[in-house]
Image: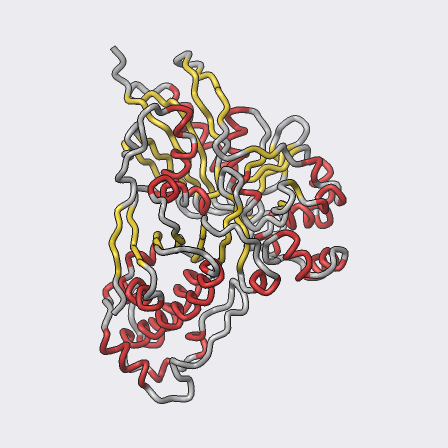
Length: 464
């Protein structure tokens, strides 16, 4: 009698944490392992992922799973951070580096590229993505062609990171919808194909055929003589939407909060205007290839920088904010304070990386770190309203679901609920949402049971 528990494995690769998770047939986590790897530097001395350490760990864990006496791995999938490319030569050997998407992009090269394509506004509108340098994966390839031509000439295949991890197991080249729809500047949302500029630049020949994110490849577990279904891998933000789409039918927006706060509206497929694109609006693709109107805001990073400033000013530990709870009296004081920089002053969202106006404030105006931190969150929410409004426009959304770090911040959640009094605002809780989404995407390939009804726990916040 079979004693091994049937599971799906997910390698969930974040910038900091690398996780291996096993889900049973009810999508409970039955095993979790976390690894951390120090960054190395690329050939320009800029920090980047140690892809050798990452792939060595992944392949070692995969070998262990295939021989496990406690689990029968019926399927495996991958979710990773986006805008990251891995390149192989004609022999399938990796070449070059996994360059960091935060690496500065040469301004002269960028302007030359945009001049050839009608300027920034025109190119953004054509590709439905803001111009963000290396955060646009297509522009990484253009940079490689011109700045690292010897490497570029040797490239046979360029993979997005999740598809490279899948390739390590299957040996099959593929490009996948959610990565191409992730501010890559590579996808034509109107025609449903690669952008023409990739062929013009001799880049498209290095790219793989495009497939949907629920595609699997049958591979043999040679240790057990069993078939394993191997997924093609997903972009992490897109994977995180899958549990919501599986659980809820009433139209909703997801606020995925972390270093970036990403507003996704799966019920709005409208392509962004040139003005919206400048302000951080773009289109994603679902794993089935449908456009999703989305906005990005570098709010988590902004929060961390401003918290450091408050801590330094008041000579306190930088984690002071974790013990602060929402105080309506402080809010009342801030709203009614008369000063040269009123809390009611007009705010204009300029771009996805625009810091909120707190960075312009004089910290001596605040009597305590509690007061300063409330003001920071007020300023952040003011900015978030402008960002999220772009995906709510002309959409029948009733519910806003918040996941990630800020959903556990009671000041943030209360201010957000106050900012959207006509919507139902929920903090959500689920087990390993990104990895869960990657597992659910290939549910059909390994699991005959219906999806559980309790994948997501909700906590509603009411406006006051």
